[in-house]
Amino acid sequence: MFIHSIALRNLFKNKYRTFVSILMISGALVGVTLFRGYVLRTLDVIQTTIVNGQFGHLQLGTSEYWSQDYKNKKDVLLGDHKFMIEKIASIPGVTAASPRMKFYGLLSTEQMSDSAMLIGIDPAKEKTFSVGLNMIEGKDVNVEDKKILVGTSLAKRLKLKLGDSVTLVASTLDQVVNAMDFQISGIFATGAEEFDSVAAFINIIDAQKVMNSTAVDVVKISVSDVSKLEEVKSRIENKFIDKKIEVRTWYQISSLFRKVESFYNTQTGLMFSILVFIVLLGISNTVSMSLNERIGEIGTLRALGQSRLSLFNQFMLESFYLCFAALSIGAVISFFVTKIVNMANLTAEIPGASIPMPIEIGFYPQVVAGFGVALFFIVNFFTAILVIKFIRIKIVESLRHNI
Amino acid sequence: MLELKNVYKSYGEGGQQQSVLEDVSVVFDDNQFIALLGKSGSGKSTILNILSGLDCPDKGSVIFSGKSLYDRLDSELSQIRRIYFGFIFQSFNLLSNLTAYENIEYPLYLLKLSSTERRRRTLDILDHLQLTQFQHKLPGQLSGGQRQRVAIGRALVKSPKYIFADEPTANLDEKTGHEIIELIKEMQKYYGTTIIYVTHDSEITEVADKCLFLTNRKIEKYVHP
Image 1 (tube, rainbow over the protein chains, first blue to last red):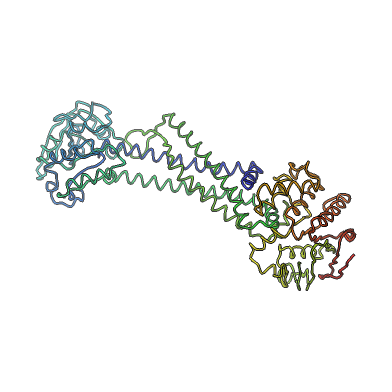
Image 2: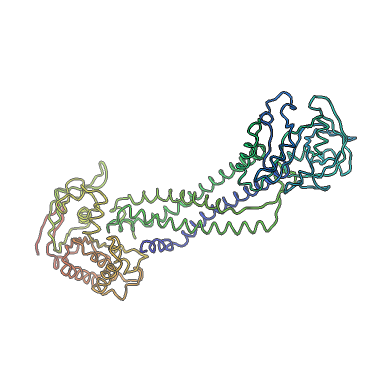
């Protein structure tokens, strides 16, 4: 207890310096955890948007379909999808399964035309997904025959309103041009500009008619517990082990999400490195000043017979206490700042988003702990280097300094 | 017994090297008050530092318990200082954020004694040095004389074989300095410790068992008062 009491008293000896050190370390933790909390929350929102609005949790398709290693698309479609959907729906962990048929075509009004990505969906089955599309206008995904839901940016480009008519022109699977008229029944926004600027949903029966096929591309699947995604994925694949079937997660399908995630991770790493650099500059300065003032004390303690190792431990104990206090304060500040920012209900236009995204910061204990431990080790490692330098000074030289 | 054998020491480098000790050999017997006298810069403190394991000689050796002090590992040297050597410094060198009691207790903590034993010995010394009423005061709250008494207590509390005192009265007024010398002498007799006392003050010859005079980088006189 004696050594702990001395360590704490030494920290309180120069209150201003200790305060500055605590401010630097806790400030770094607050900065990096808030930024990471914002990134993870944003990625969470994007993930929800992608899962609910586009891909579902999982999608099942043929291996050739995923690898795009085919000459004619009709060779890689799922012909017996109704039977498959029934089988998938019975697998534990699966909450919904619905067919999808995707193709590209030209949407034309009387004034203009634009290319679009058409997605055929089964409205009845699509409804069984817990969260549907975010509708800006119109009802929901309940697309009836000859009705179409268009993305907000696509609607803006083609100047489409509810009730307007559009003509879809597309090539069938046999490369014959086909056309069908639709009426706008809804305008949606998933939040992903890339998707909302091209996507349109139609009834799967209409999609199959345009494509002149009874097959579908993929089966979209929703699961009850996202943490068991891989487990459910394996169960589904095992169910169709005799077929050339591959199940992909939303993460594997969404290259956009992976790019955004990689971008944010790089930013976090960069920010953490900059903050660590600033903290180390500051800490090495304050620790050096502190050790410089205590050279006389180091010499006296060495003369009294305290070993270098014991002295090293004593100084490191002070550093541990300092870091522990700073990181605890930083964690508490992070928690409250997170609450305050989230209560403010802020929104921002972010690149790649078709609608303003909420500025929310998640408080993730594992993130605070992770960065906290990293800062703890980095700060103490550099402190240790400085302490070693000072305790290696010759005793007689140390004793020349005032205590 | 502590012995200096053909010790050489110089400071500086290259052409600016200045010799401080040349071929110094002397034996320090146990249970004595030995004064090391000499002018300022004569090398008294250098001898003290070399003897106490704080500074390595350029040549020669210091024999302690039959073995050269500087042939040992740093950790062994620390252990010797911890167990056998005590120090009284000119500037007291008390730890400023520890009370008088804690400053005296510190060497016992380094010896890993139990808290009960540490308390018994510390209170005993405080009582002996008439410092009991000041035990909870920080060094900054004590007078120079009181601080030096705490430093003497810190040196004595572990009952070391040798105490090295480097001009302990230099920062004190004459009266207090005289009291401190008397106190050190009294303690030396009571505890049977060997005191090696460095000073330029010839008053010490009145209390010392043995006086060594250092001139021209050598011990010139070896006087038994």
